Image (tube, rainbow, N blue to C red; front, side, top):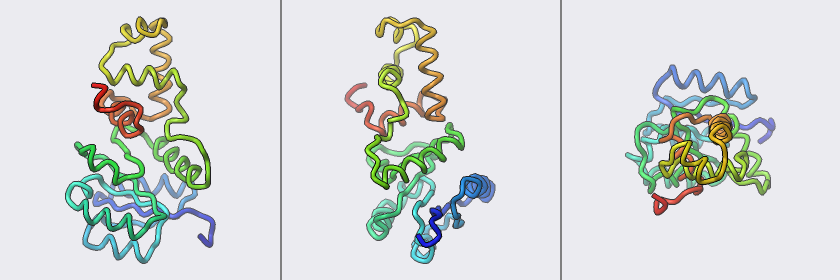
Length: 196
């Protein structure tokens, strides 16, 4: 990039949501190109703008997976983030570099963008590097359906320590619901479907 600033294209049909995301991105120093979410004009806009990141709704993958695969092929350096709206089959989650959930707050988007830039520039840090080994273990047991007390017993910890780990997991991921944490763990391969 000539200016050194990373460019993000936000493809979102809701002006309210798109404007909020744009404000955050500009505040964090990104150049932002807005797209109205119309799938028929997306490719043309991508060819003109050549963004580093594309943020679009996950429903695009549901209804236009072949087109998204082609976009990924035609723009190999661009990272694609998906707003998860409703459910997204595991088989389509791989079309996105990062999934953004309604439960997450703006910090999660900021950290995800920063992590992807850091990874792209040669970092050996994994996507789950912000979680400690113990937090990953607690998360694993949580998504398997164990209660805080059961986790405390299984790991020989006090319930207060488990609560502290849960609080840290929520702060680091920006995800508050168990279903959101489950998807987070699955997409980062911290758990497998066979674990359930």
